[in-house]
Structures are given as C-alpha cells and as structure tokens.
Amino acid sequence: MLLDDKIDRGSDARTDSGDPGGVFRCRFCRAKITTAAQMIEVNGSHRHVFTNPLGKVFEIGCFSQATGCLNHGPATTECTWFTGCTWRFSLCASCFSHLGWQYHADLTGYFFGLILANLLRR
Image (cartoon, rainbow, N blue to C red; front, side, top):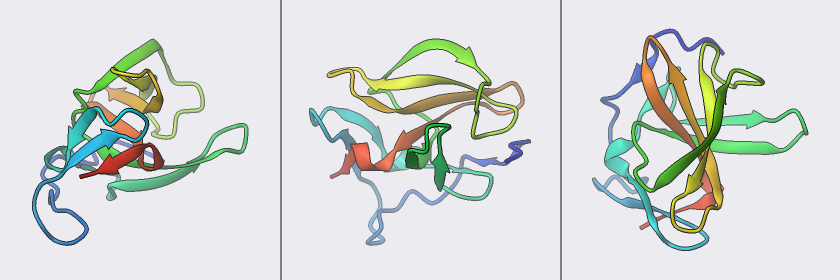
C-alpha cells in the first residue's frame, strides 16, 4: 500500500450512529486513549485489515493522535503495512496492553493505527 500524501486529517468525526464525538478507551483497563475527533483516513479509509507475518489478522482504525498511548521500540520499516512509513508499537500508557502502532512518514508526519478490538467506544 503506497502512502504518499494520502492522509485525510479532516475526515468526518462522527460515531457509527451519526452522532458527533465519542471517546475510545483501552478495552483492558478503560483508560482514555483517543477521541472520535482524532479519526482520520489513510489511503482513503479509516479502517484497514492487515495480516502480520505470523498470520494474525488485525483490523485497525487510523487516528491523528492517541494521547493515551506510550510508543515503544525503535522505528522500523520491517513488514510495514503503509509503504514509506516506519512504525513503533503503541501500548496503553496505563496498563501497557498492546493497542496498535505509531506510524511515521517524512512527507505526512505521525499517525496511529489502533487495533479496534482492543478499544471500547463510549
């Protein structure tokens, strides 16, 4: 998947029911991770489904910020799901559960790909 400059930071921040707003919390400890206002589209979509090299499937949502995340490890391009991006692990800053990845490209800056199954929307 080629990233280029295909990040839409002005995507509609509405819940699935059409209401604005919403908070995304860690499924494991309920800490606040991000908000619906931070939802973005990358390569034309907020949601993406990817399979890692071990065969595990992840459905992720893209966010411009995730202030409840702690990013861990050196940035790498190994097995990146977004061409041209480096990634690091993103953990819940409260309980250290794996919530997704922080991506970076020189052209577009940082964004988060968070595992939707590991988030609760309230």
